[in-house]
Length: 415
Ligand SMILES: *Cc1c(COP(=O)(O)O)cnc(C)c1O
Ligand SMILES: [Zn+2]
Image (tube, rainbow, N blue to C red; front, side, top):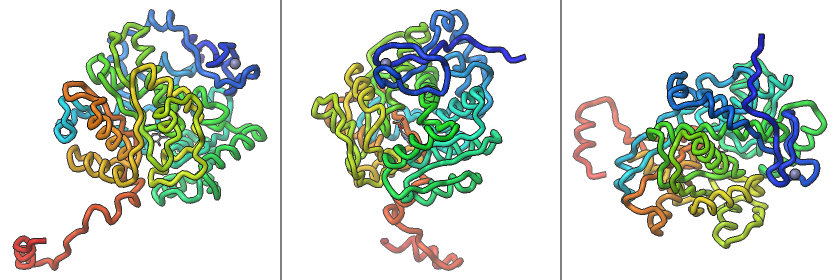
């Protein structure tokens, strides 16, 4: 018999507060505000303790009362609980005392934090009776939908801009999904997907079941708190595309405080985008509430290249409410950021990771992060998927014949 849990109660409009049934809905019919999942926190408080969480398997479902499914999860038993790495060598280079890297480059199975959102989205899509899942993606989401749909026996369609990195395209094709490359920007892909979602009964993870999908990102925040020994850091730096992850990290911290799982303290949440597509950072820097969309993104950071971010307004609220800031390093700084993280900590991040490191460097230089404060960097995807970004920028192998004298000669050379 299937046990249904009453921890998540309804969908609720973020703007007018109207409640909706727990179906495949994502916008309020009255005010067009986005719908968000609501929980019975009083009930959750009676069952969810630190001990309970720590007694469970080390994956993202250890926080299952705070994730929006009714039965048991069916996707993602190996997802999450990625390492929180104490990054002393990086800290030294940045001039800081305490730096941690939340290393989602090794998230299972597709090496980005998107496996978190997809685990929830596909588990919920199944509960809602969907047999075909789909997404609009800048690359990582497509990889994750394709892989998790394959292992869960679901049929999938993934829609991407046609000009993505080779590794990201192949990283979907290999799973036997239907890859649709669109000649256009991510925003064009997303518009098309909204039309398709209205026409067919498919679960578009980030369109018609977006409220469920988005909640998966909270697990990254919960893990940071737990892995720090149940405390909040002074600062977190988060890469932003549509702006969902940064708002959900904020929500995760607030929920843990509300449930008494962590003590409240000031934790500044900062956002990072690449200069060539930084609609949220631009708005934050001029103090605007309205996001001016970027129509033609121009950056090597394709995973974050969303010109019209769905959660832009709410990510600005997150940064303002927590006392955080936003930075938009250029592509040269991004490459330097990737290399700095690799050379100091042995972690090869994708372009979004380079953005995060480079933005952090700026925040430290501008005195927004002080040397005696603690910091967590959210490193969200693996560098092997965006090799184009650093190809020819890290030197070359020095080639010799298989002879000791040639090796000795090479050591003697100055180059
Ligand atoms: C999708 C993505 C993000 C940010 O996602 P949001 O749309 O802001 O939630 C960050 N890093 C990587 C690598 C991504 O793929
Ligand atoms: Zn509303």
